[in-house]
Length: 413
Image 1 (cartoon, rainbow, N blue to C red):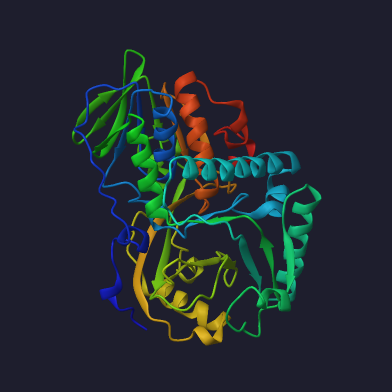
Image 2: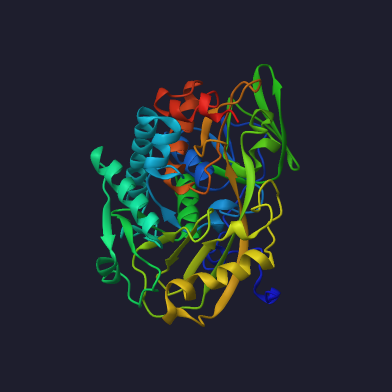
């Protein structure tokens, strides 16, 4: 079926339901610290620098939360993209534990920042549920929960009856049960980033709207060249995720742009209190019900011939959007016929080992970058922002984020 293009927009549900136009200033000629990118990583980095009373300029091309952060599912979860058991299998136990601990720190930082700055971003911590749609799925879920619990991390295995008690609509016949991670958070992504940028500005940061074209060196320090002029700095942090390789050549072949497509329904009765996910396809599906009753649903990349990989196009496509339309009716028969009010896409950045990069950029003195979150930017963004702010000041990459090094062996294809 051909998708109704009148529902397509270059703005997401999160962008449409908050004001993201933040007062900006002309690009100055100099600043101690320059942060590029107004998503979760860039806004958090600017915030942590400004909170120290430091001179920082945040550069964003369009407006805060224009990119991936403003087009996502609104989850602040824990763990890397492959899950805890998957991370152990790929990275080894020690690295998987370290990365999981970093995401737990991220959750604490998120809670602290949102609370201390009074950011009204619909923050709540109901946990997340991942549905099992086969006996094998449920066995894998049991193994994943057991691995987390063995190392002291929260997780529960739900049978079908326990799951039904948490979902306010009849389960489809193929659902066997689920795994549940208590405490994971849901937020309104646009309101979150707007709140962090506002807080950074209150602490003294400046926001400039410009398109960064390249970074040069002058007297051993970076100079950021934009379509609005140049700005010299002591150090620069790039929070560009999928666009990172356009500015930092070392990330070519390391961070690959991947399109994620999403839709939202019109408000409906309360059905889902928790964040929800499943694997109807190998690329995964996810959704949450927002406080106004809308359901924001994404996934189904596997319906695209190339899985929407290695492209910079943020337009929607019929194959993926048609597949998204089938998700809720298939899993929850009583949700058939929900009205779709908006469809959009955004770009994620993926790495070969499904773990982000946060490190100094080779051959670019004074430049650090964070990206390649593999669709899990929120579980890392606050923490990466804090440590990259520290790196920019100390002119060295903190040891705490060694598992996110650009030089780790698992990053090689």
